[in-house]
Image (tube, rainbow, N blue to C red; front, side):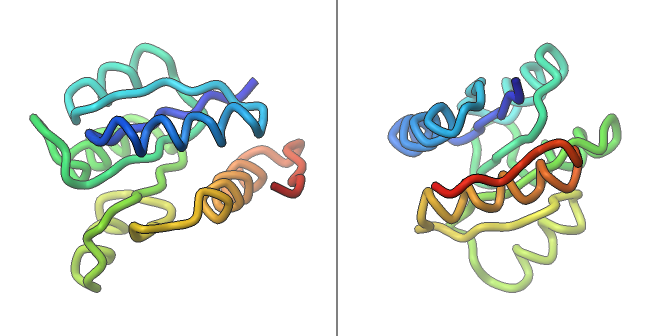
Length: 128
């Protein structure tokens, strides 16, 4: 079973995403700050990381760069920061996709499934 690391300091957002992830048959791990995100990434070796940029202790850009130095794991940034410079910097930091808040959880799940399908050819997309 694939595991998704969900990183956001907003508990409500994490809970909503966890519900959708579980409904689609994935396991999830959560972190609420950048340092914990790196620890959980190293401890659990998830299949994909969803990460906010504005995090306590270490921002999402820093976490992306650190993860990218160790792994090719897919990373999707989910952020309210929607100017071109932030999005470009997200990709430069190593993100595979960038979703701006507010977003539809169904759209986020479609993006997760698409990235996981590309990284594992046995993954099949189902409708939400």
